[in-house]
Amino acid sequence: VHHVAEDGEGVTLLFGDVVAVCDVDRRHAERAQQAFDGRPDVYQDYRELLQRDDIDVIVHATPDHWHTLINVAALKAGKDVYTEKPLTLTIDEGKQLRTVVEQTGRIVQVGTQQRSGRQFQTAVELVRNGRIGKLRQVWVALPYFSTKGGPFPTEPVPDYLDWDLYQGQAPERPYCRQRTHKNFRWWYEYAGGIITDWGNHHMDIAHWGMGCEETGPVTVEARALFPNKGRDQCYNTPDRFFARMEYPNGVELLYFAALNDRRLYGSVARHQPTTAEQVEWLFGKDVPDEIKTFNRNGIMFVGEEGRLFVNRGGVYGKAAEELKQNPLPEEAWRVSPSHDHMGNFFEAVKQRKEPVSPVRIQHRTVSACHLTNISLRLGRKITWDPKKERIVGDEEASQMLSRPQRPPYQLRA
Image (spheres, rainbow, N blue to C red):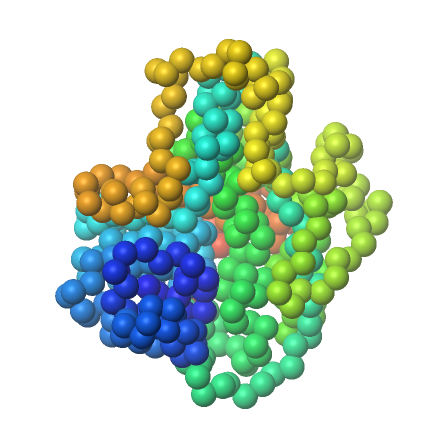
């Protein structure tokens, strides 16, 4: 196993015989090396490491803008990959990665570990087996992580960091420490903010329960509040947002930040108060007041005969309460029985079979998140063709399916 962290969160994901570690921040690579008694070799450039023939698997936890480039290189080098979510930085990257997976036949597990959580599997089966009646609506609620931060001062690049390699395909920017480590996710240059970060987890479960794992919305309309709008050297992703999506099966999905589930993350500043006028602008007048004051993150499935809510704390609702007296028959359980996400990956590697969270599904999941970002940044509704995977009738929006890539870090899939 080779572990690529490159300023991500990968040390806690290690599994198997670790023979090498890689991070553009040399301190992190050396810390990971010491966690394994100094045995793994240390690299700062993933390209050097992928030349080794004695590495079978990589565990990949870099910032989002590096996910696809490293994954494609690893697959072409004959490695199987456990990669962190979100799968990609753009929708076009996902299409390219999916093609490479098909061409190489390598195994890729995406780190949407809620798929291996018993409560999420239970919720999905209850919904898909009609225990809340016909599904009408799904709420996907994220925590409200404030992105009010900056402007941050420019600093000299520390000698332990390869700043050019860290930036990769992203536009070149002056160095400040707030662009690195866990706070990368609040910069649009490197990520999609909370919408693609935490959102990838919950959107995955929503699609699973809806039976929409290999399709996507047909319309997306989103609005957002940017606490640092128009300011330089500040976090530039939104923290409060609302999106309405329509799916081919007629189900409506409401995607939003739960304004009363507030979290602090890293060096992010305190939450901004949300005025009544801002709430009205975000959500509109036809959204239930319950959504405007929601105080927990998770997925709410709304059916004609009841509701079911699930998050990492459990699954809640009448259908869940009645399970002991009225269990689902064994043949009704169609989801993977895996409750160990990393273990499922290594089992898939051994048996050369598809894991529980493959690229073909997670590309569709994160596409819905990317479309949300496109809509809210343009400030208008977009129409999406999920079969052809293209935006209909909006050239400006279509241009946002990809991003310019800084040489020499272009993706050549």
